[in-house]
Image (cartoon, rainbow, N blue to C red; front, side, top):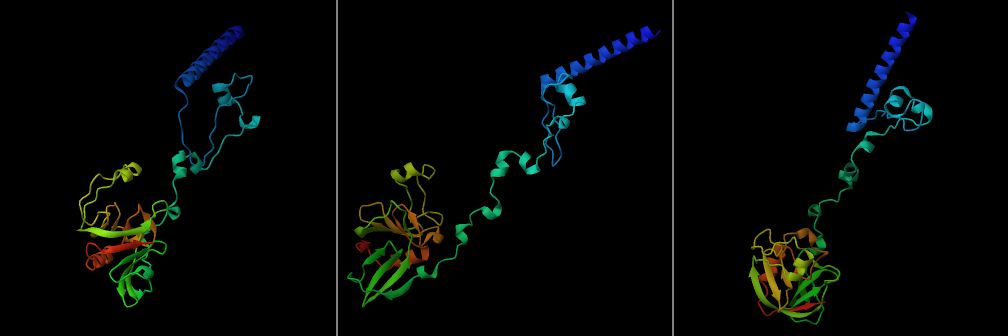
Length: 249
């Protein structure tokens, strides 16, 4: 009788092992599911050797932590994909430059002028970012401007060869090579980078023009053009004719 019970127990044990082995084989064939935990320990199968055969059996009956391999536990933010960790926090993002207050130094104003240029001449002080319209009698109207970035600053003497109200803008090939994302042509209007008025300098591509980015006045920002606030370029435009001498320092 006992012999028959032993045989039955052995048969049951063999059947159980066969089912476990079958489950382990299925587990290996489909791979382990990915589970994201929030501040919870993650128990993994013990990878080292043992007398239980490793893998599924070791996971069920073994003690990974007892064998010197504690279960990993990470803070929730470390379990997130890496691109979440690369996003800057709102306080680290650069402030919107459009909210920058306009420096009163660059407001249009009448100032003393002791230069040698005659009345009616435009003098551009690139370093200090001012444009002067000489009035005579030791005075000039001074406007704040934006000038060329490093590598795009120039100097010389030109004349205003043409004037345009709400000019169209066609970026030159050199600019498109640097910025292929720019439009090939843009009609004049409030969103146009040339702003409300443009005064063309000689046969060059340089202009004195308005801007749809008034917060850039007082900075090195352009590809060589002289930019002004729209209200200032409209005022200057009405004061100077074609043929006006322009001295860029």
